[in-house]
Amino acid sequence: MEKRYVVELTTEERQQLSDLVRKGKALARRIQHAQILLKVDQSPHGPGWTDQQIAEAYGVTVLTVGRIRQRLVEQGLESALARQPRGPSAARKIDGAAEAKMIALACSAPPAGRARWTIRLLADKLVELEIVEAVGRETVRKTLKKTNLSLG
Image (cartoon, rainbow, N blue to C red; front, side, top):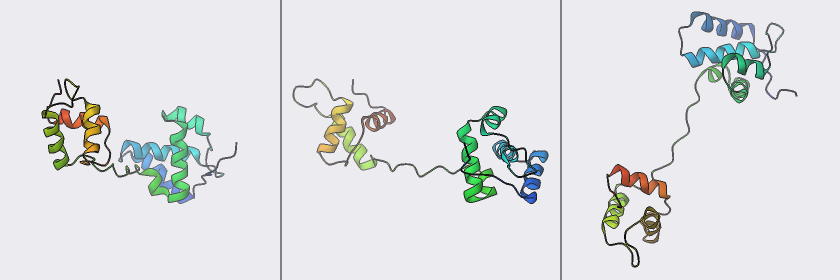
C-alpha cells in the first residue's frame, strides 16, 4: 500500500531532529515524535521504517505514526513535534440562572402521578419550560451532583 504522506527529511531537518533526540532536553512526547520522524524518513539517508515497525518500537499506535507523518507534510516540522491543541470544549448547557431554576424545580412537588423527580423528568421539564433549548440527562445529573442535591 502506497503512503499518502511520504516523509523525506532534508539534511537540516534530520540534523535538527537528531540533536533534539541526542540532547534529551525536551518534553518526552517531543523527543518521541522526533524519533518517529527520523525512522519514517523515506529519503536516501533515512531508514524508511514501516508505520507498524515504528508503532511497535515506540509503543504508539499506527494511527499516531500516520498523524505525525501527516502533520509534518501538511504543517511542517514544528507542528509535527508539538502536541496538538485540543479543540474548543462545548459551551455549557446549564448556566447559573438555569441551574437555579433546575434546583428550584427539583425541590418542588413532583409531577402528578409521580412520587419524586427523576433525572429524565427534570431534563424533559427544563426543555418544556424553555429554560434550556436541549439538555441531556448526564448534564442534569452532573449539575445535581455538583450542588449536592439528591432526588431521593
